[in-house]
Amino acid sequence: MSGIGIRIREIAAYRLGRPERALETHRGQILVLAYHNIRPRGAPPMGERSLHLAQQDFARQLDFLVRTHQVRPLADLSTSPADHRPTAVITFDDGYRGALSAGVEELGRRGLPATFFVAPGRLGDHTFWWDHLAEQSGGVMAADTRRHCLEALRGEDERVREWAARRPLDGARAVPAWGRTVTPEELERVAGLPGMTIASHSWSHPNLAALGAAEVATELERSAEWLNARIPAALPWVSFPYGRVPANARDAGPHAGYAGGVLIGEAVSWMAPPAPDTWTLMPRLNVAAGVSVERFALTTSGAW
Image (cartoon, rainbow, N blue to C red; front, side):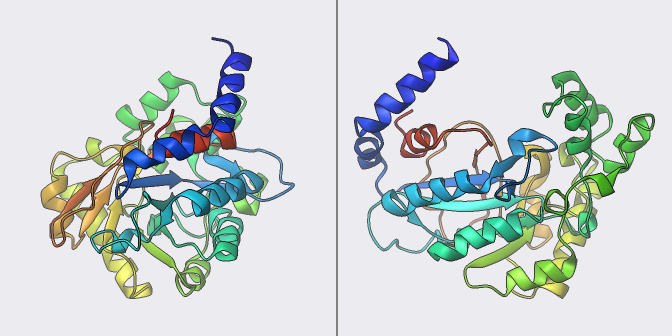
């Protein structure tokens, strides 16, 4: 089916009320959403386009969730919900400044909670390698390039930059402030806002599944130590970079002090509330930029 045909189907299904009907089958269940960055109003696209959701689109998505879901904190999922509507949990990966400014602005307007997973070793106006590589190919990185960076180069920033030394990878000043990571001081300010929690995304954002057990332990423990020292109320959860989980995750995670971990993928994964005091590995639905509000409504309601 053509793109126009799919778009017509989206609009028709949305107007026929399919999201509301589908939500009835997910009462009491949980859907965890994963975002990356929020592109401020009026700012042109940059980097890996799918990661930078326009602020106005994020606002529309939140308005839908407010009407149809309970938006609850990640830390409170084992407690009884206020009603039987499906639960939505909002999370962000990477520590982009746009997420912690424009994103927090929209969340604050609606009094909604969210969790931000950050890699402390990449804070402080860092520009991610994938944004530079994707920018050189029109905003979408080639699949073979991504595979090489994640597997052969283990997703490690320094190794990718060395491999791509002849490409303009180090032009961080050309990347707008909202497309770089926050400083530790900015992170602390957000952590002090109502409903905003900070958690670990490893120390330096490598592909943990490609690392040895000792390296995985260092990545998880160093991040937890930094967060506990700088942000006492940090949530003891970890988001595994690139959605790739090390073989020893269920041992390394608790050993580093984490109560649970989250993944990321394209599939909608509804869950029952996790059991209290049990180490949990939760799937999340990646919310990519460019998704229409109708598609978002249909997807997060289970109708699409």
